[in-house]
Length: 457
Image 1 (cartoon, rainbow, N blue to C red):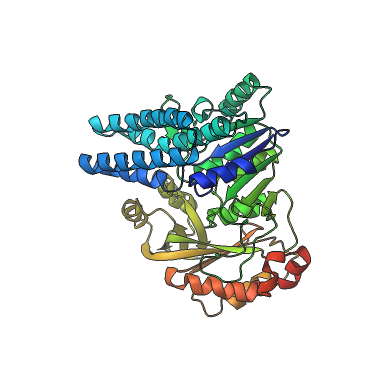
Image 2 (tube, helix red, strand yellow):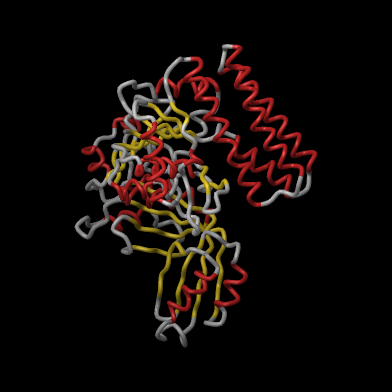
C-alpha cells in the first residue's frame, strides 16, 4: 500500500486533474490518493466565512454564486460526457446549497468549519467522477469524515483512525485504488472539523500510518525540498535525502513544501516519505527516512513573524524555579517558544504567535525588566551537526559575518543551528549562507550527488 497526496496546485484545474489521473494509474498496486482542495478554493471559503462573520450577507452570497459557476465550468471541461457532467453539476449544486443554507443564520464556529470542509469534498468528487465516469477505471471514494477524527485536545486520534480506516479498506478488499480528502475530519462531538491549514500533508501521513503503508508520497509543484529558499536565492537545488528529524526542523522553520506535523506519524512508524513534483514527475524528488547523511549542513530555512522577548532580572534569575515560573506563563496563554538563550542575569526567547503578547508581558514584568523586539526572523541551519563534524558552526558564522544577529541557539539538537535576525536582513542572510555553504556550479545543480555534496559542504 502506498499513500499519494496531491496539493491544491496539482489538482488546480481540469487539465491538472487529468495529469494526476495518469500519475496514479497502477492497476497492480494498492494505493490511497489524498487530495487537497483546488488551488484558491480554501482561500475563497475563508473569505466567505469572514464576510458572514462581518454580517456582509450580500457579498458572501455573491462569492458563493461566483464559486458555484466556476465549479460548473470545471465540471464541464473535466467531464466531456454530457450525462456525467449533468449528474456532477447536480451534486455540486447540493454542496453549494449547503453553504447557502449557512447564510440564513449567524455563522457559528462549527458552521465555519463546515464551510471550510467543502473544498476537499468538491475536488475529490470531481476527480472521482472523471476517473470512473470518463476514464472507466475502478476507484472507491472513501469519505475522510468516516475515519478521520481529532480528540478533545484537537490532536489526531490515531487509534480511532486506524480502526475505522482498516474497517473501510476491508469492505473493499478487492479494490486497488481509494480516493479521499485531506485536511478534513470530525471532532469528538462528531462535528466536521479540520487539521488546520496545510493539514492535507498531515492527513496523508496519518493515513499512511493507519494503513501500514510502505511509502507516503507528497506531490507538489516543486521537485523536492530545496537547500535554500528558491523564491529569493538563486542556484538552489533539491536535496535527495533527509532524515525525519532534519525534515521536521526544516518544515517547522519555514520550508513551505512540507507541513510541520506531516512527518511525525511517518517517523513513528518508520514509513519513508517522498516529495515529488507533479509538473516534473520524472524528477527523483526528496526521500525522507530514518537515514542521516554525513553532510554537516544540508539546508537552511527561514521563519518570519517572530517576536523576541528579553527578561532581565539579577534578583530572580538564579532563584530556584525561576525558569519553570517563566515557562508556565507561556503555557497558560498557549504560546509556544521557538528559541531560548540564557545568561547569568537574563533570559531571551522567541515566539511566533503574538496574539496574547500583552497579557504575557504583563506577567513577565513581575520578574524584571522586559524588552521586546518585533519583526524578527529565525534562520535555521539543518544537517548532521554532531560533534565529529568539525567546523560547521565556523562556516555558518563566517558566512553571516556581515549580518547583525539577535540570538544564537546551538546544541539543543544535533540537527539544528538557529540564529535570529531582523526580518529586513533575512534575504541577505539566506544569500550569504548560500554563497558560504552551498556555492557550486549552477549547471550541476540538478545533478546533485552525495560526492558533490561533500565537496560543496
